[in-house]
Image (cartoon, rainbow, N blue to C red; front, side, top):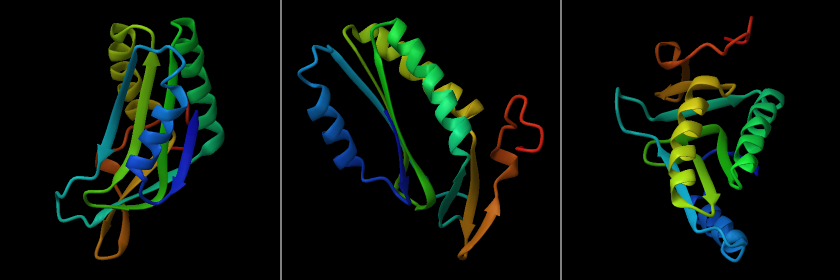
Length: 145
């Protein structure tokens, strides 16, 4: 399940909803990662643009990897502005065994940082400034860098 939200994520609501939906499906592990915007470099927050068709395709490929291991991947991400100490990203893996979930969440989060078509901007004094120094060009992206 891939969910996109305008601005900051309602973390507790998302995690509780996922937990309630899957707790009786006989998964022994529910491992999650919550990304929180840090107060650093004088930013007020971060702003995100997403190219949804590529993100959906990338996520679907990961769902197939998860399915092959009898696991499920869940992800929520923000579009728009997310201020310091708010959350912009949640990922979770459910699997019958913890080792699968622990390994997959690590691989998934790292691949997300490298390949997801999400562009990050710093918000400083109300202005969006492209965070090029912290961005990774997408493989085979051409102009979408």
